[in-house]
Length: 272
Image 1: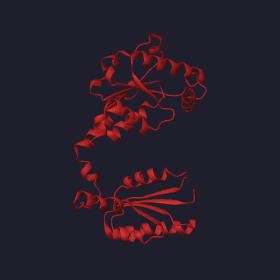
Image 2 (image 1 turned 30 degrees about the horizontal axis):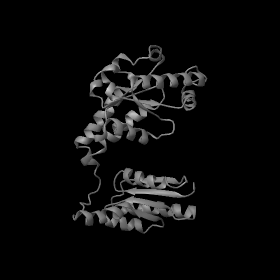
Image 3 (image 1 turned 90 degrees about the vertical axis):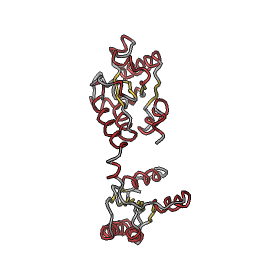
Image 4 (image 1 turned 60 degrees about the vertical axis):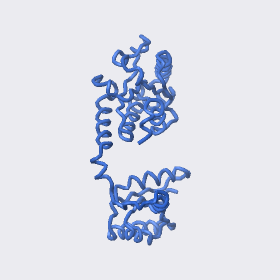
């Protein structure tokens, strides 16, 4: 399916149409060529988008798939005239919701300027800054403000999970590495002791950890399988001893890891 194009057409950034479209495409075992066309907010831009879609149809000999989140009906009508399979998500969902709620939608184009002024947006920015400041144990200041503190061996997925929690959920997530000195003492770092209730552990299969570390420091003792086996085993033993909730990141996506953490530590963040 590499020669089949999928277009995400939006009058805004296109993030919504791309996210929604990709979640649907994930149900199929294919890898199409993806094209995001953002800020298609007038008929001239729509006609230009149609030219690109129709060109792909001619080159590929089959109609591209087109996911849209267009509010303006005139712009949408232009896109519907293309040679692709147009899946309009707003019409699919907004019209039934208007009936269900008994009100008309505001049909506003581009909500991101409003979002940027909202409290939730500023909370997310604050959470991102917090995650960056408290990445890999580089600062222990204000750990009392953390919603969650991730612990685990180096390269077990703590940093990307922390940033995802901050960016998507506005969660202040710090992360702290567990190192051989902690294992020899079989005790948590002193900075973490006052915050036991906020700790959540990440583990990982030693084989996968070795692969990841070899990409960073190939052939090193740090990346050797024997060292990874020992570190993972010791980290899990320490987390069990300290009663820390933990999961393996080996076969889980960042989204799955983050959702599990929220369910365990901040279930309120799954409601908004």
